[in-house]
Length: 577
Image 1 (spheres, rainbow, N blue to C red):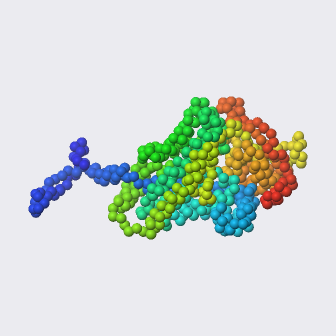
Image 2: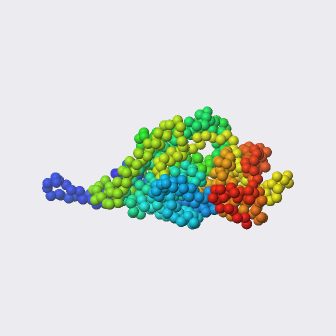
Image 3: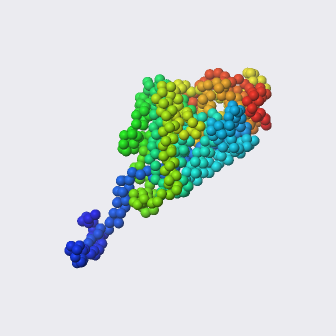
């Protein structure tokens, strides 16, 4: 770098340099001269480092970001498990996992213990079922502790990540319908791939001897490819409204748990909904193939997918699904692309990455045991992913494509998809109770129970909870367009409300009998819900929703009538307060 004549002379310094003269074969005759060095020459090293950084094509920073976003989803998942597992699958839960395990064991009674475990791997096979509440809490708290430690410190190894994967798989496999959503398998597959981003046992934010494997990177890219293409194909093959571009006319109003933004997006102009649907098809059906078109196209793919997921987060409460889907998209960005996210300077993450990459390109050190094990594990991972992908690819190519399904008990390579069909109207089940001795009396006063997030009171603002998740509220959405015979847990919930069960009531936002004796009767009413029109009469009255009764969902029930129903299913009988 030469002297800049535009710099004032007082900002330059004079230095004496010795210059050898004459041919190298002779003794050098040294003369001296004064050389002026600009004062900003110190920035030269930084600029050279920046240039070196732009030339790097490693994925160390991407690996760091993988862990951050994945562990954020894991923290939420284990937090949800700790808060809701006892009420849903605990000893006195709506669908006790102890009953589920016993039924599973009885069904496979002619199999060995190992065969039963391989069909449904879970730590609960090794525990005492007399107190499943404590076991479930222990698993959730242990997972919450490990994921919080890794998230806060940024340090992980294969052992810790494998423990997280095993803990959550143990919960998913006994979670029954409460854990039947696509993001559960997606978190397990993402977590499984995350194991291979880490050193064997070293705890370091940036392991020096653990460069990111290309096999693992392509494992993540293969994951986001299947997620997006599967979602796009299930739409095109499914509901006709995706083909005539009208699905977004209904989606915001009829999605499982709308948020306040969905209220306003629903009332967007028709042409905006057509644009949304076309953009969805472009993102899910065409953009995934950008992964195979070189570095720049891959980066564009990652940016579009992350932007798409951010829009979905803003427009609905889809648990941690969209946050989690951002993780495999990060595999599209190398260190040169993500460099602007990290500080520069001596000792910074970028400086350490450059130093580590220089060492890797220099003399190769003697292979360490952990590195050898990790390389062997990565090769084995590639072979395993290829083998398990065969039925997944066949499913993608099939006209009878199924979504959110796993083909192995470990949930390693799964099929994905979302909203293959769109409901054109929203219906809700409203649970009501009365203290009247005669449920059919005209003067019986029925009072509504309110859930944490699902629509109920038309005047209540839609909730905003993502990435958190209320599992009962989500299942109530499915129950509304089915019957109670398909969802026997809803009658179990009704029985618990008749007994004012504290665990069940903790899942609700409002109990109309909080300071009174339990209701004598509980019933389910079926309502049709529509968003109120902004500026209209209902909106002026402070109502977000307009509802109209369809009919009875299930008839008035008393606790005595439900006791035989409980006994037949092995459910504990609720004890009224």
